[in-house]
Amino acid sequence: MRGDGQDGYYKESSRDDLIDQAAAWLVALDCGTADETAFEVWRNADPRHASAFAQAAATWRRTADPRVPGLLETSGQTELAAEHAYYEAGSRGAASSAMSRRTALSAGLAAMLAAGGVTAWLAVPQRAYAETMVGERRQIMLPDGSTATLNTNSRIGWHFGSERSIWLERGEALFDVRAGDSALRLHSDAIGAELTPGRFGLRLEPDTARLMVLAGSAKVQSYTIGSGHVAVARGSGLSIEPLDPQVAADATAWEGGRIVFNGMTLGQAVAEYNRYLPYSIVVAEPAIASTRLGGEFRISQPDDFLRSLEDGFGIQHRWHDGKIQLVSAPSPTGGG
Amino acid sequence: MAWLRDIDVWFADHVFLHRDRHRRYAASIVRNADDAEELVQEAYARLFALDNWRSIANPHAFTVRIIRNLAIEKARRADVVRIGDAALLHRAEIADEQPTPDVVAADRSELDRVVSAMQELPPRMREALYLRRVEGLPPPQVAEKMNISVSTVETHLVKGLRLLIRRLAGRDGQNGAENSVQCEATDKTDTIRNRRETT
Image (cartoon, rainbow over all chains, first blue to last red; front, side, top):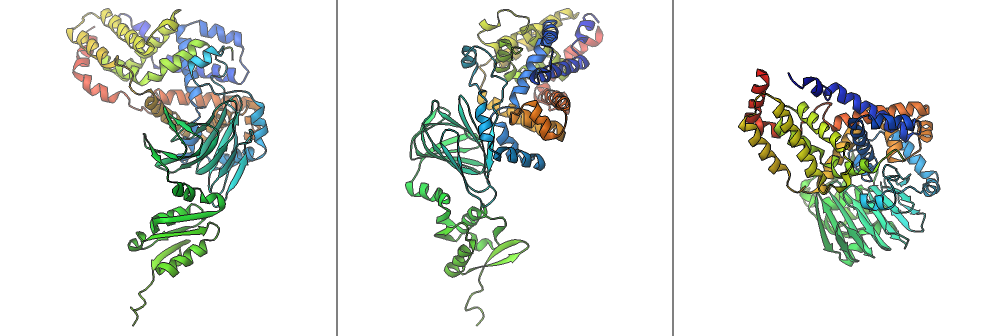
C-alpha cells in the first residue's frame, strides 16, 4: 500500500474542495470583495491551488466567449422572463453606456501579453442590444455612424470600444459599415467576419448562414471575400460563391418592405413569407408545393399574395386551426 | 485584475484547451476515469511549479510527457513492472504526441459543452451568470436586475461556476469522454489491476 497516503490527496473529495475554493476566490476577485493578500497566500501555498485557480479562470473566461449568446439563443432554452429583461436594458439607450467602458476582447495571447498584461483577458465588454418582433423592421444607428437594419424577428448586440464588434444573434440584418480606426468584427454562431467599410447582409437559418458582401470586403477565416460574393456556412463547411446582382437585390428587397419571389417553389415562397407573419401559411397539398412562382409583394400585405395565388394558380386559402391552409381549387369543369 | 497571472492565460490557451486529450491519454494508461483525472491534475500542478514555463515549445506535448512520467513513477513504486505496462506507455505516447489536429474545431466542441452546461444550471444561477458574463453588467447592476443583494449575486456566481467546472470535468453526471479509450486498453489495464490486488 506504499504511496497511498500521498495518492489520496488528489482523490475525488479533495479535488472537489479545490474546485470549490478556486471558484469562490475567482468570483470574489471578480466582484471586488476578495482580500487579495489572502488570495496570494492561498495560491502560493500549493501548485495544486494555482492549477485549480487557473482551471476555474479558463472556464470562467469561456462563459464570456463572443459566440456564447448565439449558441444560447439557437438552442432555444433561454429564460423568457430574463430574455425580456435583457431586451429592455438594450433598448433604453444602452448604447451610451456601452461606449463608456473601454474594455476590449483581446484577440490572442501574443497580442495581449504585448499590450502589457492580462487585464482584459477575463473582461466582458458591456453590450447593447436591439431586436425586432416578427414582421417588424428596424434601423439602428450604431455609435460610429454605421447602421444596422434588422429584418423580422432578429436580434443584434454591439460593443464599440477600442474594437468594434457586432453580434447577430438571430435573424437577418444589413450592415452599412463606416470607416473606423479598426476593422469591424461581425460575430454569429455560424460565421464570423472582419468587415471593411461597405455594405453587408447576414442571414442566419437553422442549418446555414449567408454573408453577402454587397460593397467592401469581408475576411472570413483566412479568406477575403470581395464585393459581389456570398459566403455560405453550412455545418463546418464554408463556401464562397459569386453573387448575382439580381439575386442580391431580391434578397435585400425586405429593406424596402418588399418580398420578391423569382422562380422559387410555392413551398419555398411560403416559408419565406412566414418569416414575417405572426401566424403561418401552410401548403396543405404536397402536389401544389412544387408550383413555381414569381412576383413581388408588399410584406405588410399578405392578402395580396394570397389573392394572386388564387388568381394566377387557382390556389385557394382557408383558415384552419389558426393557420392559413393553401389548397388547390376544385377543378372548374369537375362540377359539370 | 492583477490577480490573474500570465501563466494562467498561458495554461488556458495552450494546455487546458487540450484537456480532453490529456484525460484520454491518462485513461489509456490507468485503470479508471478517476485515476486518470488524478494523473492529469497532478501533471497540471507540476506545470505551476515550473519557473521556465515560457520557454516550453509545445506545452501540450510537454504535458503529455509529464503525465507519462508520472505514470511511470507510479508504476515503479509498485512491486512489479510488467512488460505490458511499458509497451502501453510507449504506444500511448506515440498516439498522442501527434500535432494537435484542429484547434478551432476542438474549441467549438468545448464551447458547446460550456453552453449546454450553462443551460443546465438552476435558473437563478444561470441568470446571474448570464448578466455578469454575457451582458457584462457590473455586480451591483446584476443585483438590481435580479432584485437581490450583491452578496447573493456572488453566491449564485460561485455555485454556478462550481457546477460548470464539475460538469465540464465530467465529475457530475459523467460525460464519458474516457469510455472509448477504456475498451481499447482493457487487456493492458487488467495487468495493472492484478498487480494492485497482490500488493
